[in-house]
Amino acid sequence: MNLEVLEVIRQFADAPGDPAAPLELTSLELVQLAEALEERFGFVVAARELSAANFGTATRIAEFVARKRGPL
Image 1 (cartoon, rainbow, N blue to C red):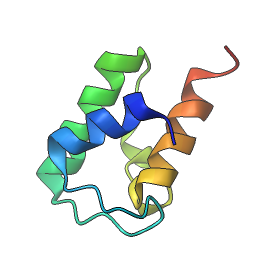
Image 2: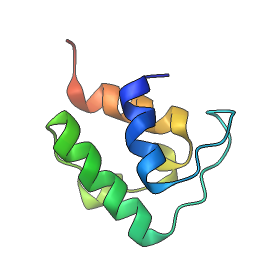
Image 3: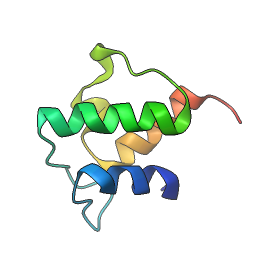
């Protein structure tokens, strides 16, 4: 788990001890989290990407960020 990503998630949600556990995000929290990730990591989140497949768990968010950032 990327600690930078987890730090951003914790600003908007109570991250469970298990990164694969579902996150309980309101729609406002989801948008705020996406905006924070955009700002922190320098990419754009499209509206269609705001899904449980990308934002349902801390693990999925970390994987999403890794895909968006591309190879380092």
